Image (cartoon, rainbow, N blue to C red; front, side, top):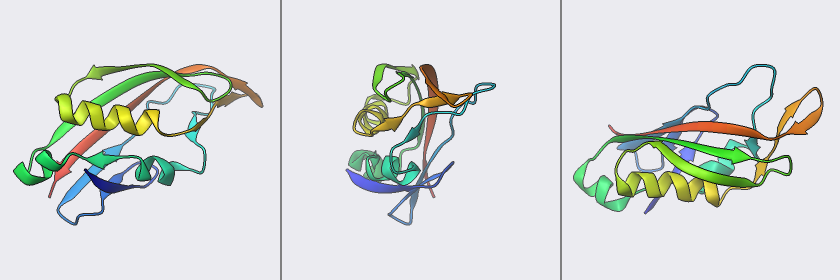
Length: 122
């Protein structure tokens, strides 16, 4: 698998011919969970599947998962599948990333979080 780059809203693959994007679904009155160390950490944990690179495949994946008050992730599920290899890549990225919890009125709160990934070949 090939490592990719991630800005706050866009994952950009280190290979110049491939890109990814991820945008969180926002909830009202709450600061969203964010990876410890920032979104670049999620970048380092996200890989574009090699078979997809080779075959110039593109796909979208939407993950939903629970982030508790300690930043622990659980109950990850694929709400929109992009195919097995893309789903696995997105799940691995979320699982291997440490998260800061969402905050509301200065307190950590547990939230369901939705994170779409768009795997695109240029």
